[in-house]
Image: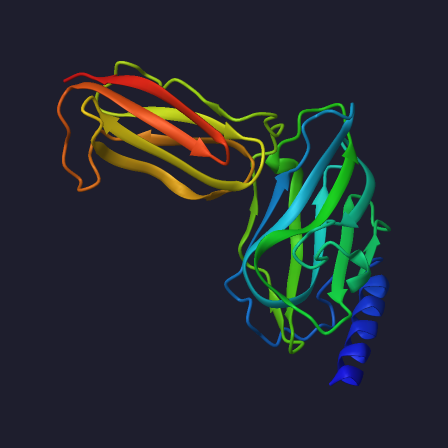
Length: 269
């Protein structure tokens, strides 16, 4: 088993290096199908704009199962961006805080494209969600999702089976917020619905719960793990059972890590 994995890793790295010139990651690669057919991959902003002229984007994955390796081809608008580097994320899903556990290769030989790949070399694999690779670009423009495209992607499981990535999202590329914030709902007063904007500077569980003036819970608007960034949720004026609530004053509270904040809103009919 160890010899098989070693040979596979060597072939995989040589394959990435050889196909980077052609810009075709999956050329000659057998898509056998494995445990990651339903994994979700996203490219998102990962910096706070503190480095003038540089932006950092990270590829992350959710619902990974026995993930051992990956390969991606990223296309970008070379008239607006200068590629600087790509690297495996420290404390990412495959690195585990020690990048020596994974073999990482990258190439930018084709203008406007970056090919990256990584493979665990210690016989281990990873489950769940986490960052995989970081891309650094230099630009003076405001980044837009349309400026980037994931041309190809593959995920490799512990058995060496390969899934072609079909669910890829280019996220909001605005600057990451530097602090937690819960904004006043808009419009306010409102009828029939209103939007609450909020921001989180790091990934984690976020809760936004709505209460009436008696302190009784009316509706849980958000209760999930979210990536860092700018988010919003719409309240349609219904409670958790889908019933329309009465006019009046309501309070909504956001909690995330050590952050907690309360605001008021008015529903009019």
